[in-house]
Structures are given as C-alpha cells and as structure tokens.
Length: 200
Image (cartoon, rainbow, N blue to C red):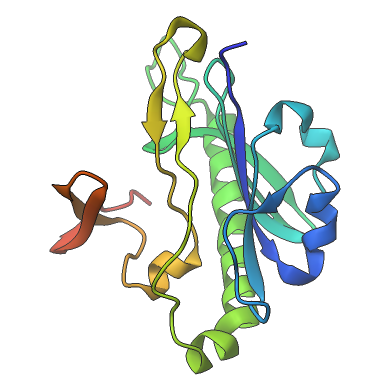
C-alpha cells in the first residue's frame, strides 16, 4: 500500500497518556519540564475521529495522500475539525454564486475560535518555563515521505511545527527563505517585514 498517513498533535504533557494509547509518540526529545509537547503518529490510518479525546485541549494536523487532510482543535469543551492543506482551508462552493457555502465558513470560524483558545491555554501553561529556560538549539526530526510510494513517486518531506518555532522567531504568517548551503545542510532565514495577511 503506497499511501502513508501522518498525524501531529500538540498537547499538554499531563495528557500524554491519552495519546500514547492511540499509538502517538514524542516527535523529538522534549525537556522533561516542558508543559506542552508535540507528538506524531505514523499509523494514523488506525486513528479515527471518534477515537480522539474531546475532554482535553489539543491541536492536531492529519495528513494523508489519497485521504483528506484535516486540522483539528479541541479546548476540552468544543471539538472542531476542518478540511485543509498547508496553504489554507478547503471550502465547498455554491455552483451558482461561486461563493463558499455558509455552513463551511461557519465551521472554519468556529475552528479558528477554538484554535485560538487552545493556543492561549498552552501559552499560559508554558509561559514560566519558556521564560526561565533557554531555547534548545538542536532538535532531531525524522525525514518523512509524501506521494504515491507504490508507484515510486514518493518525495522526502521535512515537517516543522510547534511553539518552539515561535520561540525561535518564526511566527505564524511570516515568510522564510530556505537555502541549500551544502549537501545535508539547509538554512532557514526569516524574511524581514514580509508576512502573509490573513483575511478576517
């Protein structure tokens, strides 16, 4: 089977067991005192929306090849998932008006509201630790794969996500230049004064 699904979760450390039971593992070695952790599941085919918790805060990104991609946000009270790509949300449009359907827009707005609440909760949980501990300069990640692997059309993929990026100065909506310095060496440099404007 060439399809390979991938799921990334950001959650509180105290909730780690809720996700290890669903085959998630730490994406990289976190500090043992980190309040917020990031986990991955490369067996995402085995995880359904019904199996995800709805009583704890977390953010998730589900990526597949022939499967729909989903962004998930849950604040412990509300749970919302929307179809999306790394570039934005997928919207069903009215064929006559060529405009997004009202119910789709409403779902995205509710997802964004919950997403914002969860981010605020995580920032509050990790604020003291982040301010008192230096940013760890090196992280070990696994190079994944995307595409139709059964037909030999796979390509390598490096997935970067997490609050540690913001700590390092890479905020949401910023733009970066990726430069290959040498084989095995990439440089990520933030473009100054350039950002993607979000439509409200």
